[in-house]
Image (cartoon, rainbow, N blue to C red; front, top):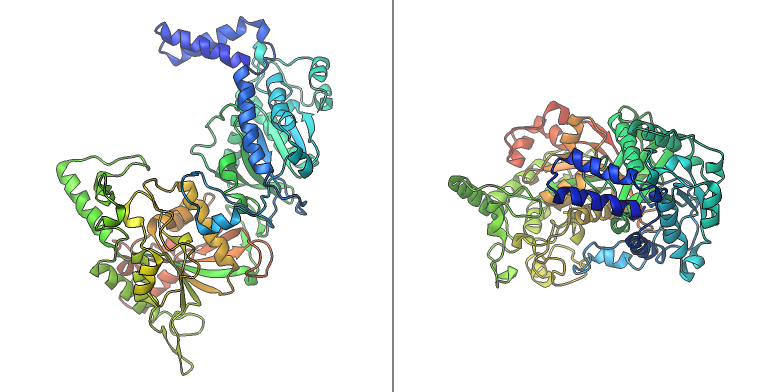
Length: 629
């Protein structure tokens, strides 16, 4: 809910305590409670004036989702849910849209094309709301007063249900005591208070956090999935939502569900006033199995991932069960990290100098380490004038790529004595093109008396390095690249010049969503064996999205930082229609992690460690571990 009048009073009390010299947090909290207990006028406090404005701001964000919505109905009845003013969308893999957190930065070509397509998000069919006045006012502002004629064209006004199980902890303070049902019906005639009137559940005075958690868990297990309607909204309280997330966290730790949130420490972080989040709650055979939650701003970026149709066939809990996948929905993908670039050497040399001088490293992901300042342009300088702009491979890097090529020529695959690929997708940065050229520009070998031609090499912005800020991650124009690399297919590159690179770095969330778009495009390809030549930072954001419910050994195997010219093989399994190259589908990964590399150790002295220039080969636990997501 948005800011209420009692929030204003308690905030003022804490400020006065601090001004009088009270620094102890516990004493500040005592001052807050004291002022709330002294104000019976705050019983079932309404929203403040600022709170109403907060609702209107959040309502505009919801409107931005709804007004781009698909007016068709979904046929998939999986339920999704979560969060304060939580908007619940259906699992619908037929439509998707994408947007950017940074309006000033141009979108990638694929996201620019998708922005014109329909969104899967629609106004809720049912609004479930706490019976306290501040929550009822928030729900009314968000989902009734803010409705436009355009909303009415998409769907009729929602049904409002007051749910006693969603109320704030009953502390005994006046602000947490609700008005009578008769009073509430008079002020909120559009709300159904039958549930509250029946006293379901009975909430005792003096509740503690575990009590709130227990009634929230019971609501999740016994009632939520039975609520009629495909699209739901939940309007509740920060304390209730915190306890609700603790329930989810405990199930994640027990291996019962999978959870993906775009906030750190999601199980303890409180919601802001009138904060809206969008989540997909997926049930299977009556059991909750996964939660995917995003801010309202990030929801459009993640729409394809949120709208999967639950295709995976699972047996048992995620931590110990099995998953099977239809073979015709799978694509084998071999991710290859780049060979050593000149920027890598420059950073290492700068790091050695920094250690000699005793410089400390930054701990902020948005700040450069002292050693990385060599990758920043000087004030007034053009990034393209920097000697490390779109950095090339070193001589050592060329050798790493050639050794991987030689190893693939000896690696049996598909009944042949070598590994051949149907397609190679390459980042458009020069060092990626050089790596791919060294590995794939020659025939992989002869089979059945015929020379197998090199694979087609297609350049894609979707697998480029995290762009922005560092000069090494900008790219040259397509016309320049095509002149140097005529054997590559640049037809999917929308712009000749680099429209993505700027002084502002691409956010981690944007990299993750771009990685998902890459997986979606790969899953639609008719080719069944694909190599992707890409970057370490990009791979970190891609693989970091998977494996939260795995055993530590498997997770570290999947998510560990890739070394130079390392090969990591996965199997993509697509949700949705079987036909390829038609509709976009969310993707799931099943990973025999490093199986391809570990099998190479039997071929000779060229071990995975040699290829990656690593100090240690993969452990026994890293080999042939089946991991499903």
